[in-house]
Length: 180
Image 1 (cartoon, helix red, strand yellow):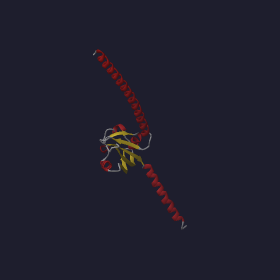
Image 2: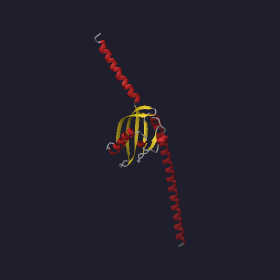
Image 3: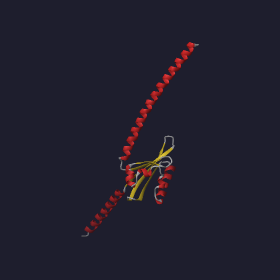
Image 4: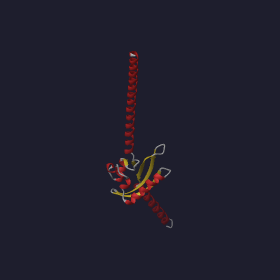
């Protein structure tokens, strides 16, 4: 019986040692995965902060979770003032209705995408924005939020209008020159 007890104890000690090795390996693997995730997070943060388009992400409860630097500049606000709020709470009523239409349309759309051109009167002046919203869904269809990307097309619009007026002026000059 004593031999059987010693053998059982040795087996238990070996099992504990094996379990400890597996636990240590799992901890090492987890640490490596955490480092990789942190590197990816930093990379994504750098990318988002260096693009010229404004990017705002919403979580599944429609609260703002991230805002990049371009969005801060375009909207003329501090990101910390936006994070945690529902975007519908932040805009004037005329824009809130449009955003609500977009959010609802996006949630009910099979395409998971919504696009609209908006004219906004912001503190830093009137801006013409091209807004794209995309629903974020897992591979099995669970809604996990959305990403709103917008570009300030105010200058582009001005340039297009100037080009159109130049063309009008050129044609008028041509029409005047012909009879002369």
